[in-house]
Image (cartoon, rainbow over all chains, first blue to last red; front, side):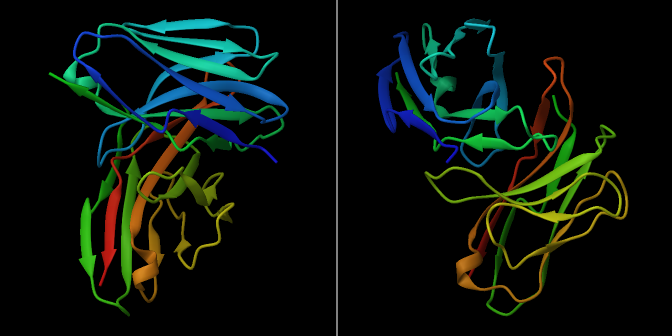
Amino acid sequence: KNQVEQSPQSLIILEGKNCTLQCNYTVSPFSNLRWYKQDTGRGPVSLTIMTFSENTKSNGRYTATLDADTKQSSLHITASQLSDSASYICVVSDRGSTLGRLYFGRGTQLTVWP
Amino acid sequence: EADIYQTPRYLVIGTGKKITLECSQTMGHDKMYWYQQDPGMELHLIHYSYGVNSTEKGDLSSESTVSRIRTEHFPLTLESARPSHTSQYLCASSDLDTVGGYEQYFGPGTRLTVT
């Protein structure tokens, strides 16, 4: 069964600190992995996307890593800001799907305190 | 920024009412999707469309129906709303992205509450 598991479920950090969010998946055959940011009451917005041949991708203060052998990914946020408070969702796409169907994790709810 | 719109953003309605959630995109994308998301839970695909006059049910069973008469418009209808339909509904559209997959762009969502 294709699944995406994220940890921790929730995280509270102080402004300016770094943090790392984890994602494990069993989706096969693997096509790509994306990290989305979802603000409360809004739709998800893509942060990064990686294929199996990429092991790191950055977008400003966000850096995603991928280990396709162990089927693990992480999202590292540097120098957190209050606006980083959101749910971060790991999403995996399988190679066999022409639909572009995505498998979603439940997200990590990040809260940044001043 | 993606040009995909949903209305209404919030809706509170009584049991038994018929409702239509609107979704429109101006990007010319052929593929469109409806997801249902409960608080703290993952998104579940309930409907999708490959293009005009094409609609399919998703992974999660839903009593809602959809139509795709125009490329840019993908409305979702509930004939008789029930409290179990209370949820957030997210619309998305996609194109072929640079890595050979499909980048999905999401609308802001409709928060539906059925009393």
